[in-house]
Length: 444
Ligand code: URA
Ligand code: CA
Picture 1 (tube, helix red, strand yellow):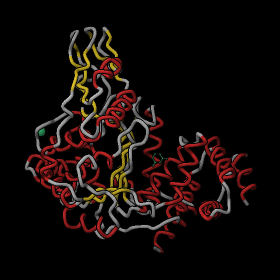
Picture 2 (cartoon, rainbow, N blue to C red):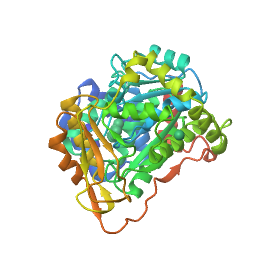
Picture 3 (cartoon, rainbow, N blue to C red):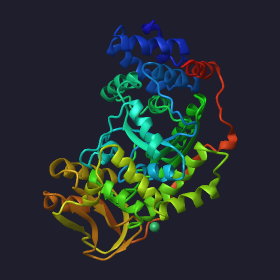
Picture 4 (cartoon, rainbow, N blue to C red):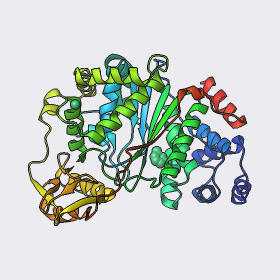
């Protein structure tokens, strides 16, 4: 079976849903080895997957493990494709919950230079993210929201195949990325899912057309499984917020929810994502303008902050520790060695250096960005503040992540696109694989 499937994919044919299902099940059962699956993944990376194949693979992934179902029909989840200083999840989760919509968010760890929401939460002593499904949904029910680790019992096939993709340079195939992301979100049980597809030099996808295509396929695939979906395509050519580093990002989220900090880029993305989450979760209650009104009230009235506190407390964190969380006291400024305009920021470089600072000095270390692309600066102005024992050895490299030129750069959008207007209908799916994907889920 496997040799034929590899040969057919190599020659550009599509495999049918039953074949995908057998391959995934046999691989997990140990009856097909890594070499054959690796060859198939390479053929897929070169030839691509059509929509029906992507749906079939996603369905096979979902069926490889347990699936959850959120008790409340309006429950929403959110996924970011990964970036630097992307603190949005920590803010939108309690913000949306404070508007009355349950948020059950499953999160992952840091991948490469990008931050992981779980690592940021765990900067708070005692905070637990390894919640079993009962505890997870119980907290969502009581507090309005929870953020838990993706359990190993959900989509075990993705974990095995992702490891093989990583070893064989086949991570970047769009169909494989979509199946990997969407299977985990569907298995997590939310009824509506909002994706933030990052695009730029700090993201895994660098160009707008590529990010738009991924966003489209995430939305279509999610709808094929009977869930409501939206996606935004947003800029990652510079850090999103100002803080980079696990504990520093938790501080930034806390301060933003408390109204003590309002970085306009982070706040704009937060409002965009939160609006999309409300509209996807409860389309008959929220349109763009009523979502905005509710979100502003929850943010400025303090209810979002109270919800954030309640969630952290329910997951084992303490009020006092959250209050006390502060940047590492050893701090040095990375300064501009000339006057001009900031024309570019090496986003991956900042992400990697913040990760190194946290690794050596702990959760309170990292980088706070002061200068933005387009800012006009003088010689000696602060570009970023570096926190951690080894700040002195890092400031020069960090200053070099900022390019300074004579002319102002062209302004860039923060949000390039939004995909998945709900008037398109809940099911955009057609085809036999999609029909079988739906019937699989309906059996559960
Ligand atoms: N994130 C995932 O979970 N899977 C991918 O394949 C890529 C990013
Ligand atoms: Ca404000």
